[in-house]
Image (cartoon, rainbow, N blue to C red; front, side, top):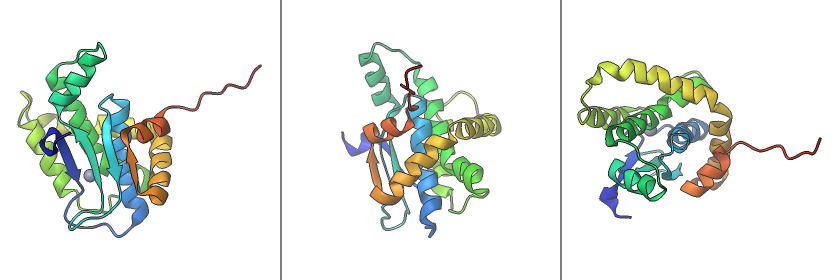
Length: 175
Ligand SMILES: [Zn+2]
């Protein structure tokens, strides 16, 4: 996949020096993208020059092609809204799981603003979408903490690894 086919999402210029907070933040992005069917490409807590972590979510056009290939169809703007929710989920996961957002979310906010610019509705919906994201994060908190715990040890997960951790564990105990 080429570089421009993805939103290579970085997490702000201020590095969070709390590894658990970084892991929760990246896990929030990755889990919400996965449950919305957006197939995150990867997530990492490996720091680079200015970010404590990255979660890579494919471009909405690429996601639309993948869905069509699977016999599903979703409007481009629906996918774009899902990408906004996924982008909001990093900070919301920190707030929900840790009680506060420890890093600078400037990069997230910038990406969210760029995506809102492509939608017919203005940023007016941002508050509602944040509330909705918070609900998703609350409902999937266990999965977020599971992904974060693996990120602490392995620092990077690909899309398949994320999906395996998000899927509920099915109880196969016979009655
Ligand atoms: Zn982020």
